[in-house]
Length: 380
Image (cartoon, rainbow, N blue to C red; front, side, top):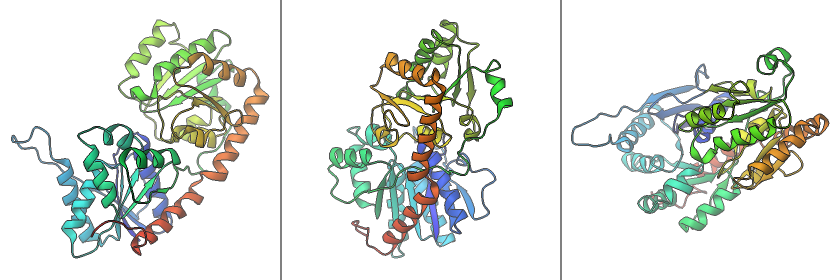
């Protein structure tokens, strides 16, 4: 198949999943065309079956903001015509599904079906904003196919937007050949020279991720044992987290690495992963850690309970429960046998349910279903 993919080319989960999906599809001999305003992350050095098409937005004095959605629709139609695309797969409803709808109309009478994958904040934040709710609902209903990354997100979308059409749940995934435990004592020693346990956090440092809680949890852990914390990512709350680390006298024990591309190399060195988010529609970072045999302490919100099984491969606490998270972290870190056993269970869970080898065929079958017209409730 020839597939056009549009996503936000950022370090958020939707951009990561869309990029990895394109890479995996290309490895299975599909032709993939990424259409976005910048090169998606993790795409460098990808397959020769992958093409990138940049959306250029011209600024006019008349516009307060560049009309990206219109420029994107134009580029989608252009690429579809030139590359003879079979379908478009857009990640994030706003504005991508609206742009895809316009592109489909521009291509008529030629058929250009599009699939919308819902990732989370397009529904929980942007889509539920009063000004965006009607257009979000309309673009979902007009899509030729719709998928959601968790049962939680599907159910919330149906309830809040009163969606009548079917939504397929296809979860996030990891390449289990890349994301796995690799012992590297020399690399660990750079962060923990005295053999201290390593806690880790990975996110885009937005307020919803509650990175300040990560620092607070670590501070409580440090009151009991020597340990190190590695913070991977960047975003608006990084400065506040660094300030809190200095305030608590933990600057020497907390390392801020910024954005990293080969995160499996860092995750493989961790003893515990922290994800105290206010909300997660799935929790991709938790899954990536679990695939690397790292137990997780996360919040009991959104789709995280579908990924982390409390007391088996990690622990779940309520949002803002810093003390509870620290208690579970210490239980794992002070009992190496417990940590190793939970890590092995985490890997087993990721391997049995979320490997790309199992999830990518679900997308392929869904593409075929949409192309056959079986999944469509949209008007052409």
